[in-house]
Amino acid sequence: MTSSKPGKTLLINHFIINNEWYLVDLPGYGYASTGKNMRDQLKKMIESYILEREQLVNLFVLIDSRHEPQQIDLEFMEWLGISGIPFSIVFTKMDKQSATRGKENIESYKAKLLETWENLPPVFLTSSESKLGREELLGYINRLNIDLFD
Image 1 (cartoon, rainbow, N blue to C red):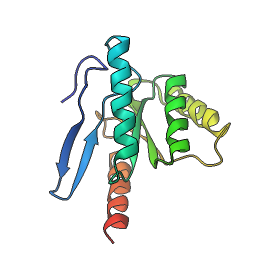
Image 2: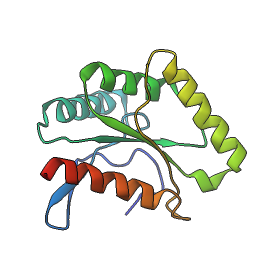
Image 3: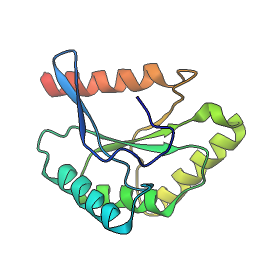
């Protein structure tokens, strides 16, 4: 289920997949339709979870592909890198714009990251409506699980 307004998820939600592993949905760190105090509490909760969760295998950073690079996204990914957190970037809503525009925004993100990074984390282009990137993302998760359980 998704909300019609971004920034509504204020809890950490756990989903067990195939009775084998968990997918955990954290609140968004960037856009919360709450006051500063609540945003600060969310930030603290998210950072604590990420840093203290020993079982964390990979963090998927979901970014709306319709937007040019946002400073808050770049800072969050920089923090993940400095903190040694393995992560992948999932660009969402690729179907909500022209292919050219979406690719321009993604290339802008990559260029910005490469200003300070030697290598980029895995990047996925997705659309929940058209199912773009679904198989690639599921395949990646499957490979992570195979590597983890072998």
